Image (tube, rainbow, N blue to C red; front, side, top):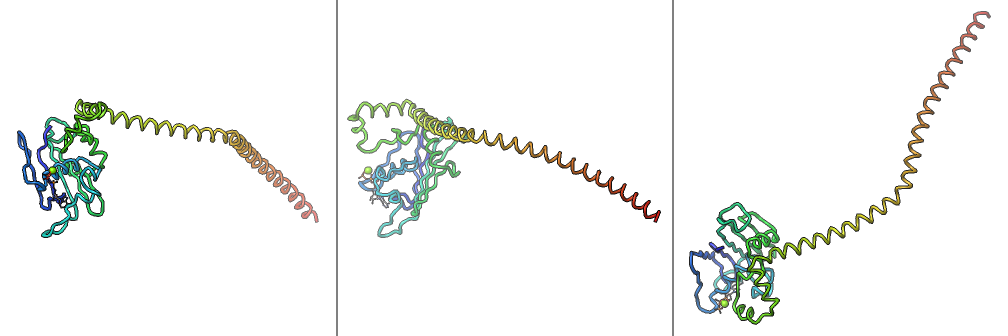
Length: 251
Ligand code: ATP
Ligand code: MG
């Protein structure tokens, strides 16, 4: 796994577009105090989904946007793109190069993209984790982290080893699956309640349905009886008419 390239624009001290190419071998960023070396490392953690402004050494997330200097106006957004070589299919995409991007506007609106296609933060975090770069991953070790690691409690150190062994992504998946299971269980309880309610209505509804059926039967019967009456009345009237005509002719 290797970073190929990092593009920074409007992030922290980088008002202009900065491109860092990671050639084979060691890439080191050297410079005087305060020149922005740690900002480069911050940008890598930021593009990989870091949500804590504090750990990016800011008060709010908007603090990562270039804030201007005496000679330059502030930027309206910050954007970072991190390029990976994906010929070994480290990430589950059919591309030989994968680029993760994150953009944040002053309004607070943010955008995430994989190969320039907009995605949700979760999709990006999942993809990175599939590649072994979890948010809690040890892939970026900040100033003072080594000594913290050495003096950490065994359980805390274990988390780092698990990340290195590639277990933590399965652990995260397990936690998510358990959460889904719990939600499904709650849904099931709710469905059982509904079934119980509906079953209570079943008795009265059966009675109503029986009544409706009887009504239809009786309605059919009524129709045929009414027809019979009309036929009978017609016959009677025809006979009377014939009688009256005979009488009339006699008179
Ligand atoms: P050191 O060698 O002391 O660790 P460094 O090279 O790591 O220094 P950084 O901490 O990366 O330096 O950079 C600090 C500089 O970044 C400061 O000058 C600070 O003013 C500037 N800076 C941080 N955030 C912003 C911002 N939003 N807009 C403009 N400049 C910023
Ligand atoms: Mg520094």
